[in-house]
Length: 195
Image (cartoon, rainbow, N blue to C red):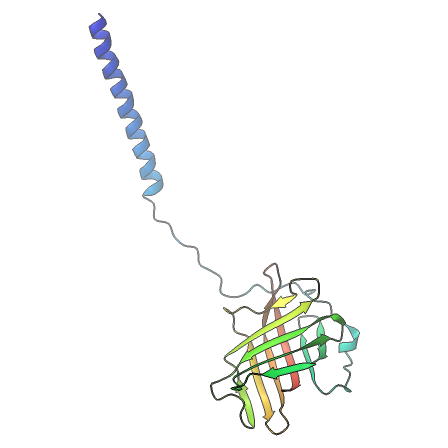
């Protein structure tokens, strides 16, 4: 009887192993034989809420005593300030300008712009920059609005007079908050003197 018990035990264990093996292999078929479909990515940035940035009263009636200024609008706010520094690189193919906001000295605007290979070596009009980095900051916060390299930010030098080194122009695009929300920047204007 001991002999038959050992044989039946082997058969019984083999049968259970076979059932387990088949059930596990069926589970694999259920989960691994499916074709996964990638979800489409939304290429249109989500527009932020209307109260994205607080405006300030001083930008509703801008100070005209300062010649070199910047300004732009978001959905409900007008922001502005002065440009205290505007520099261009030696081969005149890239420039940076920045300055504080009229809404408070702890916030301001920084632009870095890459121009066409010809650069700003002569009087120019309607020069569209292939790349512009926009940065609206507030001291103490990482940033308030920042452009992304994956989204174009429109920057045009409407007029540049080489003798005076004064440039005027426009800008627009999307700035992104730290949490990823998009804020539309429109009606941007600037007037700068390059060093």
